[in-house]
Length: 484
Length: 54
Image (cartoon, rainbow over all chains, first blue to last red; front, side, top):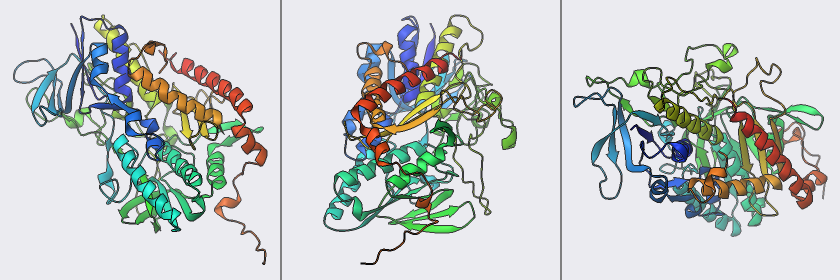
């Protein structure tokens, strides 16, 4: 019997659990360690943030789902990995701190034969003074945050209905953020909501981000064929902004948020500030801060984890200049090089380097997006890791399945307003996520699989995906037929 | 009332702005039903290629 422990129950963790649930067999044990009681379909949080959905519509209880799959549910947060075991024996284990209502604060251990770290990101609001719901800006990163953002938004709209003019600022809250897409969707949904409320004329909307140009999204931008030209996504992103009368500031590192004021530095080293009445800024991500301890009790965190606390895997971490980056640098199996029974999936793995070209201001401040690993790639990676582990349990010496971000694509359906007949969304696909200039010398991507368009069809797609993925994640009838 | 010239060389001066026809097509039910099928086809192609990596 093999014991597989999955840390985290986000997109990657849940994809891995589903894969084990399909075919691992009752003789093996799968244990999920997660501090959360509920699963959250994060892409729909932006609709919670404008009052089009409730938190209940984008979350569900994990316990009944794990019961259906025959998976053990340990509601706890992992604090340390002991890959060589400890004083009591050689079996590797993780230290946990329970978070359930009955045992909150108690500690324990969970032994494993295989470990998948899917702990996702730490929402690092602390990297920027005053950033986040405990500071002066909103967030849509969790259902709770999005609910709070909507309360603030509705208060602001009420004031506008009484004749007040308001300023909205949405974007990234640090020079090293990723996940620009969520903020991108949110600003358009705010615009849509303000128009529906009849107060758009009383609002100034401003986008601020760490992208060199709009439409970078941490992937170094994208080229698509449109209207007889191959055009950069920047043109389309700017068009969406102009069409909706939204101003934008790019190449910006937000260094401080005060009540009603955002302070930022740009790539030219200039400092500026923006006044706001409502602001939603995405925080930078870091690893959750797991420790690693060897058999003798020595701290080996630096061996297992990169400085940003993400787990090292089979990537090539040799520092190289941007011009020498290659698709081959990116991990294929997501296996830790020191301990072959430890894997990472989703945001938890340490990328070898960014995808967008790193930039620094003359003051030495890094201002460029970090690589995205959310959504579709996370699910693909979780699934590939689970399939590899099942093959290893059955005798394979090495991982058998790959999901390199330089070999897989991503689809992103970014809502620009909700409504069955009035909604629209920007649908974008890229293949591969990490440009491969050896295979695709011109643009680094397969142009037949890389496209983008705006329309109602995209909104239908986003809405359908919401119900489809929640259905799949809840292991409802026919869930196995729904692709990741 | 005096009509003022629109200020050129501003951020909003350069990007393409959709025409009325383009905006209409974005929410035209018939055309968007067709695009829905096209987008689904493209996404399935993308998923098939992404899942064939090993």
